[in-house]
Image (tube, rainbow, N blue to C red; front, side, top):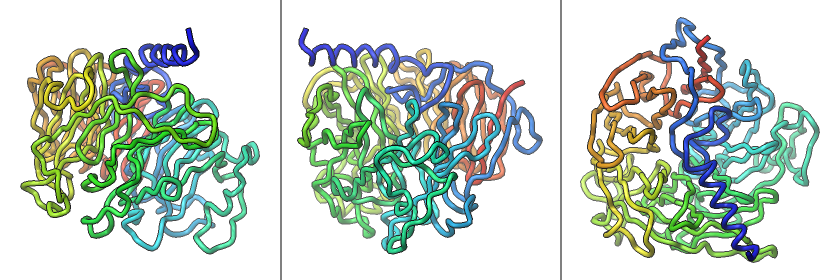
Length: 503
């Protein structure tokens, strides 16, 4: 067998064994189940009832900044979560910054932090106050994430506590304001091993927030570029920028990029993150575009060893809104009746199919959205042939589906949690929350955990008939998704991170 065939088989086996089932009952090192991004976990013994005000089943709580839109990940005895600098842990860092906390899994104490000054002068490049919104991914002693400035960063799990490792030595300049001298690097600071600036390297034009979670796939890191419109929301300054790039995870070298031309078709910005699975027995990367189209690319198995950059081979594309406008899309800015669509949640593959939520942009487009289920076989444009079912949602959804035992759970901006039959797309029941839902539902331990933006948190039975098990109100907004790891349920509000555990 030639080396290329061996690499394909090895990657395919890794996906089938570790990526397409449920997440293992252990750490939660990245968003959703490994590779597939499915928001379902194999954790058991999680609390059904908990309350941050009374302390019921509360293991610990720690303050964050003043705004948190991120979802935590848990690995290596650490918890990683993005926030802003509204509550500075280091008096040297004052003002608006993006921050990643590295916390102790046992008690929430701070080990180190990454502090990233905001992009200036245009506030639309890097939304004020918002901070770091994407989720990290952890593998061994390395932590990967996308900063608020659109940089892909590789960090040392130990921070500066074991010295400044790697070839990168610009941490002091990286955390200083533009034009200021480098800051002294201390033990509380992050240790950057390499940095790939998507603005400088591939021409990405950041807009609002780089709400992106990288995907680890073999030797590579697959990353959506935060490419979007300018402050007018009508012009696309970087139409040639790729939508998806692949980096060498050890060095940060650019290995591959797409050539779909998506930069000219993005309606608002690129917020979805890639997942992975198989297409016709071949390892593949799935990418939900800011143009409302899901793309499948062949996974890179033997990347060029020189400085050459490969072009990702497109396997197929599926348009979630084929009737939506495709030409002169800027004229539909702010149109709540007619507009193109985009994708903000992650595409989730299962067996020989894929689920994804798509629809008009929540802030600038039409109030129409769907949960789509389609087959992942075929090639070319599979829009007309692959659809299995489509379920209308309320207004829009920025959530990632959770699939478990023939059921699908999805949330939307219309305050609804939907329970759906996976085989038919038939809606089994709905549950209305107090306000919009920005987070994804988590299915674990026979329960569905749902966080409402107004602070109402719900626990329902993950079954075909509706049963509400618990409701609790948090003192702040809930934007990120709940996460389960090592028997603990993590819930992040705008200002605090809570860890709940059943004794």
